[in-house]
Image (cartoon, rainbow, N blue to C red; front, top):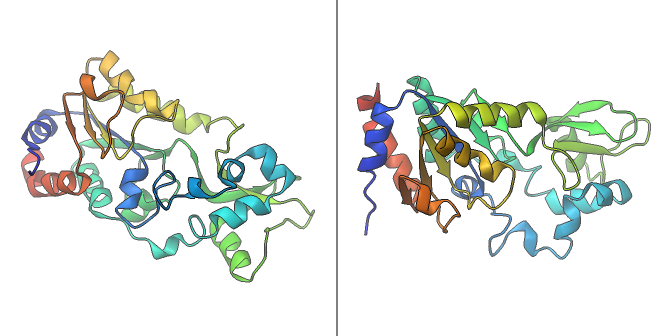
Length: 249
């Protein structure tokens, strides 16, 4: 049975300030494996070590082996209809920002400009010894040469600016995400089961400020009973937005 998105579309038509939180479910539509899915990264026996900062400092090859395909071959993946629908909402001035738990940079590739990466980004890598930074493309080039661990001239390993377990979230991105959630009269939760905190607490800020939350996710979330409406099909959500976009201007 197809889902009825009319309640969500009507809310968007009346909204003044829309915010979004996106998670891995949005990325899977582009073919990127879900970390927790059947073929996901967390099926790897070393999964708990891959994004652990202490393990990275002990043996950075664990991270680079585990993420060679997922992070450093992102050129294989293209934005999907959800990314494009959000870009259109931004184009008409309705969507004010996207808080994302994803590290694939596909929102930016789709053209979205106000993207707050709450779990960091691989766009820059910093040397763990001296702090020198290099860009994502330079790291990719090193890995394509067969280098096991890209290293600085000082000998330190380059680590992506992704938030590992044991590190703090990027403060500026998270503060902007909180401001986005608090100021949104409609907040969309797309492709996340709201299990990873503190990002999972963002839609509750919208509810506390009197806004409406709409959830589109394949599995249940802890906020389903408090959402104005809850859906499961991200592709259908994108189709509904793109079909009705001209009525939202």
